[in-house]
Image (cartoon, rainbow, N blue to C red; front, side, top):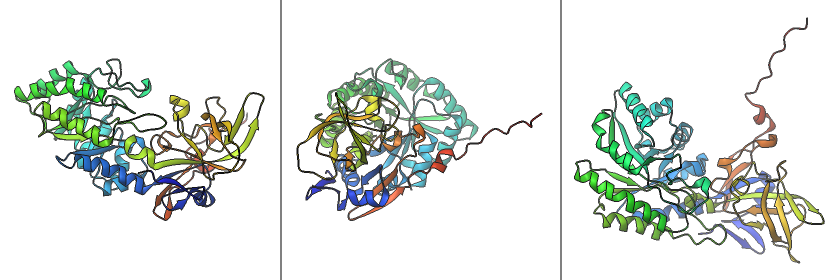
Length: 422
């Protein structure tokens, strides 16, 4: 479902006018739809329902406590990449027994904390990490549940910054090497190998790369079973893309059906299927609300300068990503082309080039599909306080993260004491 729609030329989220949110909260701010979030989760859950499985939301996409609490209440698990994300999940009421811990650089402290609370599984990405985790678990007199993240050397056909399944990426173990360590599981007495993990990238818009990866990984899972090591679950990661502009990503139903079909083809239907969606769960349920401060015209360009900047939403600057920019109030008149830009002192601070809009100074704009990798990747660059976050539920809304203050920018900083004057 799309929770954002126009009513009498005014943009609403569920039953709330975005202009009303801006009047109360100010701009820029992130606005999320609870109904949209729940609908996306239900789509995954219903697709998995015939045989079951575990949906582990990728917290890195959007870690706001209110978002996590909604998903935890629906029974979601969580895919984390840091202790900070683990603490967020716990604070939001998430069940640690439904948490998988990914990431290439886990520290000893992070491992200890995850073992203390009893997470479901560590997705281990290197041999040194295996050795460290075995030692940490041994020092705690416990057994760490493990799956190896394998790198199948599959081109996901996505932006190079978010491709993770090629041999020259930092993620995972080469498939052949991983199989060697599975067969040497006995040499790690404080580890229990319960699954296998494979995540090849983000914003994938066709099924072929997923199928290619499974066709490389699943025969090895079968071979391990034949040699006496049966893995309980198969974690296929996340990466399912959304439509930002003209992409045609597969449906959630077709995506899950492919996973089921490939598992069945290799006789692995009894294995638990674990998914780690992030963007596909939250992106389309969020919008960045921003106000036009100035309209500036030069001989070459017409600019709509807004109060949000690349520090608030970095995807267009970092990836060259396209996100739709739409007016909150639809005006009559001739549309003109604008470069929609922010106030940050970087030429990359552009949300969209050549966007056809009918707008005036002071108008509100919405930058669409901003629920994933929006606030989560924001910063305080140019000493700009980060925006508020708002969650809408039907006809009401609530600030779920207060706008930062200038005091917040300097919290924790200290000036060095001067030596006494001679």
